[in-house]
Length: 290
Picture 1 (cartoon, one colour):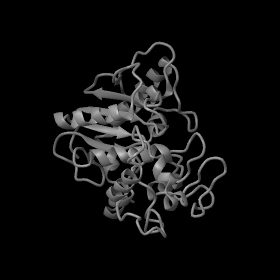
Picture 2 (tube, one colour):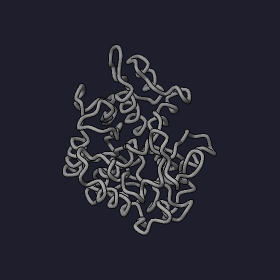
Picture 3 (cartoon, rainbow, N blue to C red):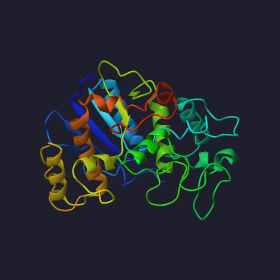
Picture 4 (cartoon, rainbow, N blue to C red):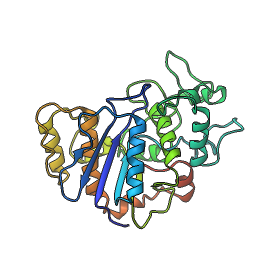
């Protein structure tokens, strides 16, 4: 696997609206401490897209992690949306479908996709509304999500669940619109060949970084600068040196950028045993899960 000199992490949001305090972007370069990009700025999803396009245009040698799912479950049923004639055959087709149905939503939102009568059937919505094809229990899981549960590497939730603080479905839908617009500009592992130079995108869980830094499962949110520096030290990183309170979104991004730097040279992270070419095309994989 090639080596990178810059490592970025994006804490994402699928909430409605133009700007979100839940979005944070951090970069760790060389052996420098990780640092927030535009600290104090309230990001829009469009601004993150523009920043990524700038990285692509500059051919910056950067590994970039994003904290949302690149696809829905496919392998368990041989389709993202069984019984829907328009169900795509691969991940890029899924992104295109989300973009098509949510094209009129502002700010890279994805709510109009969920309003489509066929899509609506597959999700658990708010206010007790459950689609008739939502799988009973927690909802359908990707192979990587089932694998991380069995191996206890991380907790997981279904992207078809849109209810609760831990749900990631809405963020993933808006993220799919982002990926659709970046297709051809920045490669995405593992579906695309790893380029010889320039940036590369990977899906991450920020909780993996917290666990690697010694944080207990279920208590991974850091809201204090001193605690953040302790966690960074556990990853071999210089301190961020933020005094006092820090938002958990900022700390997630900072810690995840340092974590990417710490593990990117481990070949096992790039070759998880369950990952196949078919999964790479349809479901993707969460970087760091082995």
